[in-house]
Amino acid sequence: MMRKQIAAANWKMNLSLEQAEALADQLIAGNMTLSADQQVLLAVPFPYLLPIKNKISLQSNVFVAAQNCAATKNGAYTGEVSAEMLKGMDIAYVIIGHSERREYYHEDNKILADKVNLALEYGIKPVFCCGEPLSIREAGTQNSYVELQLKESLFHLEKEQLRNFIIAYEPIWAIGTGKTASSDQAQDMHAHIRSVIASYAGQEIADSVSILYGGSVKAANAAEIFGKKDVDGGLVGGASLIATEYNTIINSLKRS
Image (cartoon, rainbow, N blue to C red):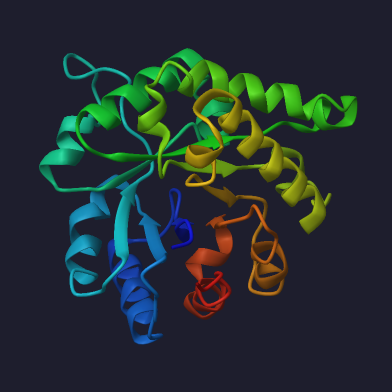
């Protein structure tokens, strides 16, 4: 059985509730035919978690994900959403460490380690994001930069906790900059990430980790990117807001 091939949609802070429900309906109408090794995740804004979860409840291998969770269990943190709250709604997945959270909300590797711990404590599967900005890529130090992100946020875990883990690689320099990451560049970093995991947890566990690519995946380039050996799907932003685009991306996942 191959590792999970995943099309994860990140709707970010977009759509009214009516638009979100309509998009979910359109995705379902697009006949998402998923094999046992394939999954679709819809990371929707917090207020839409339950409405969209109810919409997709009859779809096999389709799950709702939260876009973030708090680094603390509970308390006087106005506006925050805890892992326990997500667990209470039976939310199975949460994005942790997205580049926008790191940049705009100054979430560092230590904070993200705390978030990973809380998600796992409550039985929620993290989609852990990593990736380098343009200055790091231009300096040629992207491998060590991403390696440090992984080590400082994940390598305190028991090795077995990394089995079937989900990591999303975001080349921040290729998002909205006009610069493009090639499928070969994606493969190179995904292979590096897998080797870093193997150095800590062993090759067998590293081979079970799904590594998603998060660099402006579109219907036009999904098949080429997903076809690479170490690319196990994508974390998709803008293209996931267009049902026809996203259905094409879903159908570009590898099949066992």
